Length: 171
Length: 254
Image (cartoon, each protein chain N blue to C red):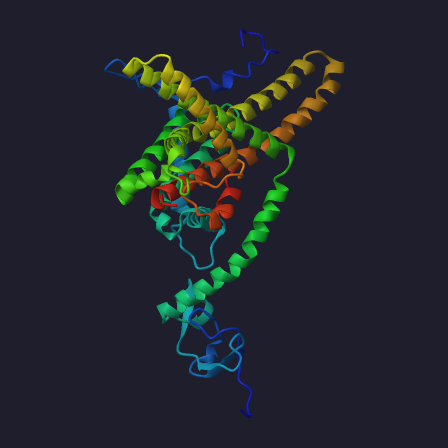
C-alpha cells in the first residue's frame, strides 16, 4: 500500500470519472478499503461536445441496489419535509380550504345516505323507514368522512403502521 | 349586466355560450365555449409535453426540466400512496392532473371560462375515477375487493352497521372529490370578480372613488396570486385523492 490511489465517492456504474481513469484502480470512500478497477469508460456527447466521461451502467443488480440505498437515505429525510410543509400550510387560505373540505365531506355523507334510503323506499315501499334509517347512517358516514379527512381515523386499506403517513397527506 | 357598465355580475363569467349547435336524438350536445376551453387544455397539455420531451437532452432544457419535474411529482406521489404496483395507473393520474392543471390555469385568463368551475365537469371526472377504482378493484381482487368495507377487529354484532356506514362512506367519494375542485374554483373566481367589481363601481364615482378603489384593487391583485396557487393546489389535491382511491383498488385488505 505504498502508493496513493485516486479516490472516488463510489466506484459504481453511474459514477463519472476523468477520462484517464480507464483501466486503473480507484478507492471508494464509502466502503473504506474497498478498491476496484474502473471497468470501462464511455463518452457522452451532446452535439459534438463531449459533456461527460463516465462508466457505462454494466450491472443492473448493482444499479438496483444503489437505487434502494438512495431511497432509504431519502426516506429518512422525508417525514421532516412533510412536517415542514404542514407547518407552512397553516395560513388563512389553508384554513378556508380545510373548512370547505370538511363540510363537503360531511354533506356528501348525508346526501348519499338519504338518497339510498329514498331509493329503497321507492323500490320496496317501506316509506318512511328506509329514509329515516339511511339518513342516520348517512350522518354517521359523514362524521366518519370528516374524521378520516382530518386524519383522526385511519383510512380504509391502510395498515395502522403506515396509516399515519397517508392520512397526513390527505389534503 | 343589463347594459349598465358599472354593475359587474360575478356569475356572468360562468355562462355557457353555444358556439356550434349540435343536436343528436333530442340531446343537446352543442360545442360550447366550455368545450372549446377543454379542447385547448388537452391540446396545450399534450402539445407542451410532446414538444418538451422531443429533444431528450441529457442536460435538460427549460421545457424538458418542467416536464420532468411534473413527471417526478406525480410518479412519486403515486408510488408513495399506492406502491410500485400503482404505477400501472400512472398514465391515468398524470392525464387527469395535467388536464385539471391546464384547465385551471387557462381559467385565469380574462374572458376565458374555467371549465373546472362547473360541477358537471368535475363530477364527470370524479365518476370516471370512481368507476375505474371499482372496476380495477373487482378485476384484480375479485370479491376480495369487498374486504374494503369490512374493517378488522369489529364485533360481529356491530358488523352490519359498520359495513353499511363504510359502504355509504365509499359512495360519497365521487361527491366530495368533485365538489372540492368545483367549489374551490367557483368561490375563488367569484371573489376575484366581486373585488374587481368594486374597483369598477368606485372609479365611476369620481375622485373620492379613485382613492377608495386602491384597497379592492390591492385585494384583487393578491387574490389573483392566490388563485394561481389554488389552481395548482386543487389539481394536486384531485390527483392525490385519485392516488389514495387507487391504493384501495390495489390493496383492499386490512
